[in-house]
Structures are given as structure tokens and as C-alpha cells.
Image (cartoon, rainbow, N blue to C red; front, side, top):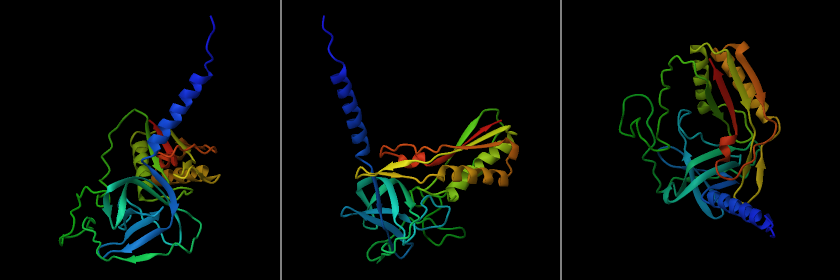
Length: 268
């Protein structure tokens, strides 16, 4: 009896796996471009252009909003899922979307457009009496408020908190500090004897097939910054152990921004 070679079968399996990954990533866009401000009357609106199309990134509000705006004179890494049937400010909505300003200065990224016919009718209003405008419970991506942190309860179970970062950056935004604060509260309430802090760096696979790799050392910088914040908030310094992974997590073009992170594992 002659056995058939397994190589054709293996090759077919590998091809099928690659095809499935490509199909999964096909509905996502990962690209680097200049952010553009559309000066709409209500609040500034951020858009960008890629391969002849305009995409909506978010509106500029305070630091408590879900979308943290980029800045002019810096390109951005945009990672999002397009919804061609929905447009805001003239751009196709990307949702979910991660927008990471790159640190290098690029003076060509300085475009400000007039608001024209575009209006923002979902900007959440700030504190104080309402004068019309969107209520604080508005459910839209750019209108929603950060909900108050839940009241922690005593527990003996380990719990992990994930702090995510912009590409190539260890800067702590409001969404970063909220997770660090939650971890510190849990640790203090439950007298945690062990708090493991581990930083990661990652690669984003762009839509043109090129990998974009974070710089060496950023995983350590993230981990040390989070550990410092935990100590300052009140977590027991002797319980904190800091580590990091020097190897960049490989991206597949789907949700690569999830890999730029620090994990805080709290053990009561």
C-alpha cells in the first residue's frame, strides 16, 4: 500500500488559513495619513483621507470623551472598521477606531477646512444646566460620557486590568489612568500581596501589507510608567513586580491596537 504525501494537504491547510485571515482583515483599514480638522460650528471634527476616500475619525471634546483627538503637524496611524453606509462630516465612519498620533513632526499635516454644510448634532454637553444640546446619556460613540467607576467589593479572586496605548507611545490618556485607578482600588481594597505589571509592544499590519513596528524600549517604558502610577495612587510598593516583553507581538491587520498594552494582574 502506498501512502500519499501529506505535503499537498498541509499546503492546502496553510493556504486556507491565510485566506481566512485575509478575509477577516479585509473589512478593516490600517493606514498612516495626515489628520484634517473640519471647523464645524459646534465642535471641531477630525477626518482624514486615504486612497481617494475621506474617513471620519471623531469630534474634539474634553478628555473624558471616548475619542481622544490627534494633532496637526503629526501623521496618525488609523486602525478601524469602515461603515460605507454612514457618514459624518463628509467622511465614512470608522467604528471601532483607534487613532494614534505619530511622534515625528510632519509640517505637511496642517489642513483646516471650513465647516460648510456639516453640523455636529450629537456632541455631548458639559456640566451645568442644559441649554438644549445632547444629554449626558447620549449613546453615540462620540457623545457618550465615561460612566462612573463601579463600586468595588471585597474579593479573594485574582483580577487583570488592561491598559492600552497609542502606537509607539507610553503617554497616559484619561482612558489609561481610569484602568490604572481601577486596578489600584481593587488592590488596596483587597490587600493585594501581588501586583504583576507587564508591558508589551506590538506590530500593526497596514492595509498595504507593510508591517509597522513599535520602537524597542516602549514596552518597558509603559510598564514602568504604570507601576509608578500605581504606587502614587496607593498600591503597596512592595507588592508590585514589573516586567516587559521586548519582542513585538505580531499583528494580523484585525485588531492590532489591542496588543499595545500593559496588563496589571492583581492577586489578593
